[in-house]
Image 1 (cartoon, rainbow, N blue to C red):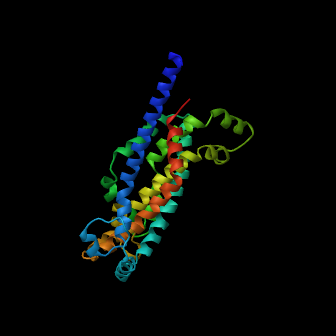
Image 2: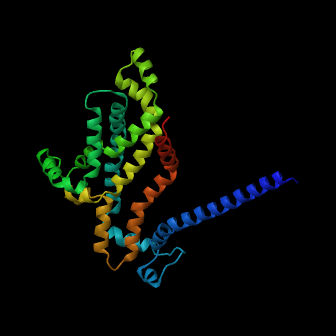
Image 3: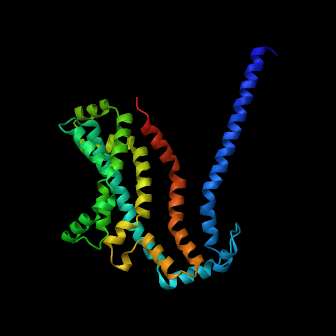
Length: 285
């Protein structure tokens, strides 16, 4: 064996060792991240007495009792439905109109384009809590208070979605495609729907998942704008569960699990879109 062969063999051994420890670290990190959720799900099946005894990795047998105690005072599934009614349209609207706005900023050259884009980005620096008083007054004047629309319509204007999708369209949609469509007589909306939208779908899917998670977990805005208990979302009902069942910790864990599991499932199923969309949006030729 020559010195060159020994060097190559040593290099390969070093690469294998590095990958082994990297994969081992990632596996440990994944277990560490998933453990709190696993314990939460396990505690949803245990009684208060069992939970007070300490942490356990084995499911209990008190899930039916916890469920009955929770449903006797609060209809958690009504809150689940309310959250879906708000989150699904919000996600669709933010994805479509965010992409449409991003397409305009990316491919149209008009006076004030840069200024308007930076104005949109500037809204990302303003906490939503600062504008809640003005928005509350606006919803009252528009007779939207205590309605789902007060929570759905504002999602059309999502600055984060516009920013990300503009970068994505800049990187992945060639201007020659749009010019060719215009030469063929295609309208701007048809060009967007038939050409831009399919190409930008991974990026749109990425932002839709993140927007769905935000809308699903939103607590502050529904708390301010909704007064009818039949319209309360899951985050609000979970807070009520904590206040109602101070002595029944298992019911609290069960309510939180019902709220979190859909997010975990959605993230697990569509995580490849998040990773692929962010990676593609970060690259520009």
